[in-house]
Every structure is written in C-alpha cells, then in structure tokens.
Amino acid sequence: MNQRSVSPTELKFFLSVSCCMVSVIMYSPEVIDHFERPRKAGAMGSPDISVQTENPACGDVMRLMLRIEHGKILDAKYQVRGCVTSIACGSALTEALVGKSLAEAGNIKREWLVNTLGGLSHESMHASHMAMDCLRLALTHSAK
Image 1 (cartoon, rainbow, N blue to C red):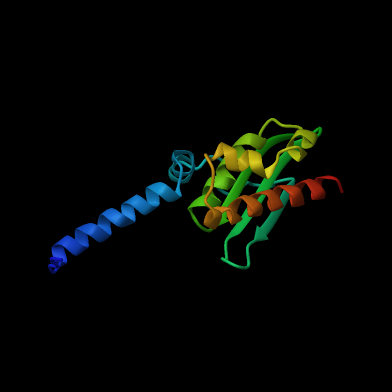
Image 2 (spheres, rainbow, N blue to C red):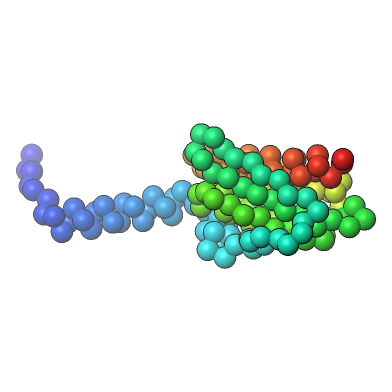
C-alpha cells in the first residue's frame, strides 16, 4: 500500500471543502434564506406583549414582541442572540404570526415550524423549541 504525505496546501483545501460541505448539509436552503434575510427582526416600540426565553444549555436567547388588537396579531418582531437556526426560527415564526388571531397562533405546532424551515438537524432542533416556548409564553400573557 502506497502512502504519501499531504502537503499543507492540500490539507488546507481539504479542510476548506469539508467545512463548506458540512454547512450545506447542516442547513436547508430555507434556514439559510431566513438567516441571511431575517424577516421581522428588531425591536418593537411599545409592544403589547414582550416575552423572553433562553436555552440554558447553549446560551441562546430569544425575545418575542407582539402588537395585538381585538384578538388579532397586527405585528410581530423578534430579537435573538444565538445560532443560525435560532435566527431562522424567529424569522419564520414572526412572519407567520402577523395577521393571525390569537387562537390561530395557538394552533401553530413546532413541527410546522421545522417543516417550514426545510427540516432541522438534531443539533439545531433546540431553536424550534425555544421559538415555540416564546410563542406559548406570549399567548399565556395575552390571556391575562
């Protein structure tokens, strides 16, 4: 069996290609789209509801802000300090919330969010849980 040394240039190329392949496999086109062009991101002046959840295991934090009138979500915004999928989950969720009644928002399932984003890897699934925890907390506050 012939063995040869790998030059530093070949190793650098291999590592570069490997890293690119991993990122393509880890994130769906939908996740990349929401990450690169987040919808509804940023602060909201005077929201009717503002809630925050965090994932203590990874340190991601999400804030969800809603403007509600007559039981309907007029506007939704989010802020995230976290990973690619946390940003994408916040974007997809807030985009879907605008125009929905509180009852309709309560019917949104985590599986819908995951499917909307083209699926999430096991390692990224925590972001969908955090986003849905934010929504459930916001809906709980709206009932008060």
